[in-house]
Every structure is written in structure tokens, then in C-alpha cells.
Image 1 (tube, rainbow, N blue to C red):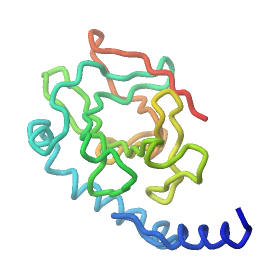
Image 2: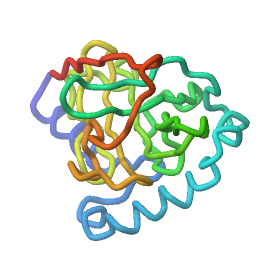
Image 3: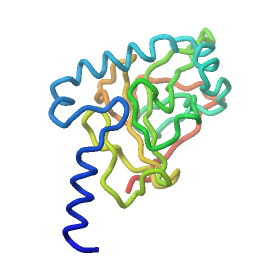
Image 4: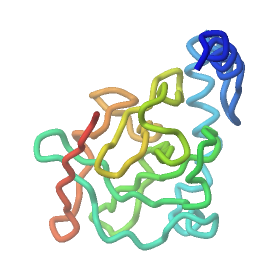
Length: 178
């Protein structure tokens, strides 16, 4: 490919905006505003029943844990959002924790972009002014946001040291990041 064509493609991509995205620089300044927008959008899904009515999976058998870094919890996926669009108002996954009472608590979200929608060998998609991470086993880009349960490891950490999974539902997850 000619260098001039490559430059033209990069210029077009740099000017492309996705739903829920903002121009570079504005995201950094508006990080708290973006978090509040995410919380406003996901507040109705504090109830797992409401999330299921909106297309998120109701029943999830496995609660994902890491051997040393805590857990992610139950991943309730909305398959209708699995595409190349990154919209902070419509996260692909809600992360729930089952409490000892049997209730589910919304702790955060996970943004997902499949490799078939955004190739793994390209520039990573961005959300919350951060490049998304690769998950080679599952062939997608991802980024967690612990919007509802403060995470001592950081808002965008992969695992949460304080999230608990019931013994009968624990599934150890070993990320394969590229």
C-alpha cells in the first residue's frame, strides 16, 4: 500500500467517533463525567431482573476468579451489543456478585469488542481514554470498569480483590493477554 494511502486511512480513523466516545483530550478532562454517565446508564440494572429484561443473560453458572488477584464475578452478557461500537451507555457485560443472601449486586461492567469486528493486529479500541486490552483465549478486546464497587486496585483493574464468588460457582480464569 502506498504511504499516502496509509496516511489518508490514519487521518480518517483518527477523526472517526464511536457512540459514547469523545475527542481525545476531552475524555481525560471528563473522566468523572464519563463515569457518572456510565453509572446513570447502568443504575436501572442494579436489579438483575431489569438487566435480563433489557437483553442481558439472566442465568450465569460460573463466577470468574483469579488464583491470586480476586474475582470478576458473574458476567451477564448482552449479545446484541457485541460489535465494534463502544458506547459507555451500553456495556456488553454487567459484572454481578452474588451476596450471601442470594441477591445479586451490580459491581461494574466490561466493554468487549470481538476481534472479528476490530482485528487484534490493529490499534486497540479505546474507552475511558484507555486502550482496551487483548484477551487471546476468547479473541476479543476488553476493559473492566468497577463503576459500582470501588476497587483498591483501580477503576479499570481486571480483577477486584474484594469480590467474592460462592465455592460452588467458582471458575478460575487465566487471562491470555497478548
